[in-house]
Image 1 (tube, rainbow, N blue to C red):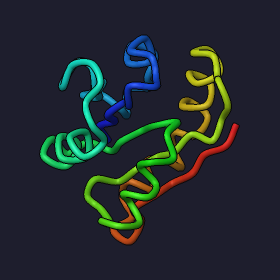
Image 2: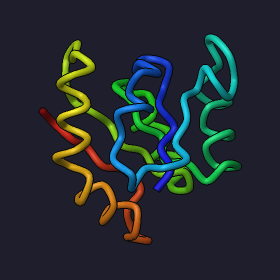
Image 3: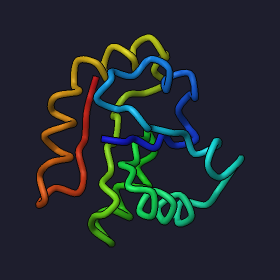
Length: 111
């Protein structure tokens, strides 16, 4: 499963991911600073990524457009990179099940 980290998450997280998420990237690496949500959506779709974000705007796009791409929303206010690393590790199996489910388009994860 390849994740595309939204701009509101740190690029540092890429180096801390479990092996199951090899090939993941960050919006700034692919599209530069400040791309519009629609551009992020299209890049994720074209690249086979699942968007991971703290931004609820992608939930609305997911409801409106469906998958692909799938969206994982992290319902945590102002989390540290350490907390996010722990959360991604602890929830990796549920994220992988979500990715494999052809009916699912949106996953909310709370800390």
